[in-house]
Image 1 (cartoon, rainbow, N blue to C red):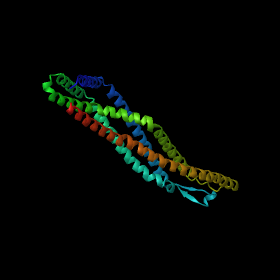
Image 2 (tube, rainbow, N blue to C red):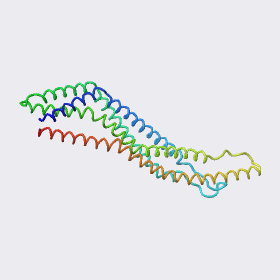
Image 3 (cartoon, helix red, strand yellow):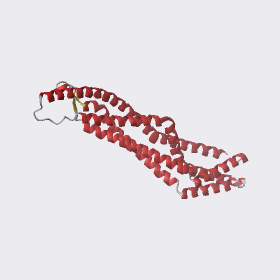
Image 4 (cartoon, one colour):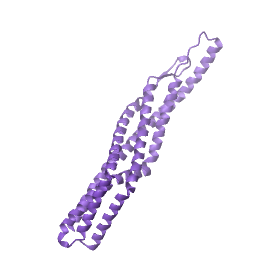
Length: 279
C-alpha cells in the first residue's frame, strides 16, 4: 500500500477514535433526537386534541335564521373531510414516534463506552498491521475492513440524528410551524362555535320587549354564526392541507430519510471495502 494511503488510513483511524471518545457527536445527536421526539409528541398531542374537539362538535347544530326558522347546519358535515384524516395522521405519528424512540435506543447503545473501546482496539490493530512488513498485507486489509465496519456502526446513528435535524431546520421547520398553528386555530374555532351553538336557557313568561330583544339577539347571533361557519369551512380545508403536509414531513424525516441514510452507509462501506481489496 502506498505511503499516502497508509497516512490517510492512519489519520482516519485516529480521528474516528478521538471523536468516539470525546462524545461531542453523541451529545449533539442526543440533543437533536430529544428535540425531534418532543416536537413529534407535541404535534401528536395537538392532533389528538383536535380529534377530541371534532368528536364533541360533530353533533352540534347551528341555526342560521332568527327564531330557529330556516336552515340548520350540522357542523359534523363540515368536519367529515378532516375527521378520518386525523385518525390516519395519528397512526403516522405513532409510527414516527416509534421510529424516533428506536433511534434513541440505538444512539444510547452506540454511545456506550464499550463500543468506543472496541473501536479503539480495531484502530490499534489496523494501524499495527498497516505499518507492518508487506508480508502481512492480507491481515492488514482484514483489519481495515473490521475498522470500517465498527466505525460505521459507531458513528452512523449520531450522524443520522444530526443530518435529519439539519435537513428539518433547513427545509421543513417553517412548514411544520405553520401547520401546527393552523391545527391549533381550527381546534379553538371549533370550541368557540360549539359553545356558541349551545341554546340559551328559556325564560319564564317573557314580556313583549324581552321577546323582541331575544329575537334581535338571536338574529345577530345567527348572522355571526353564518360568518363563523364560512370561516370554519375555509379553516377545515386549510387544515386538511396542513395535516397532509405534516404527514409528509414526519414520514420523510423519521422513515424515508433514515432508510436512505442506511442505504448510503451500506453502499459506502461496500465501496470502501472493494477499494481496499484492490490495494
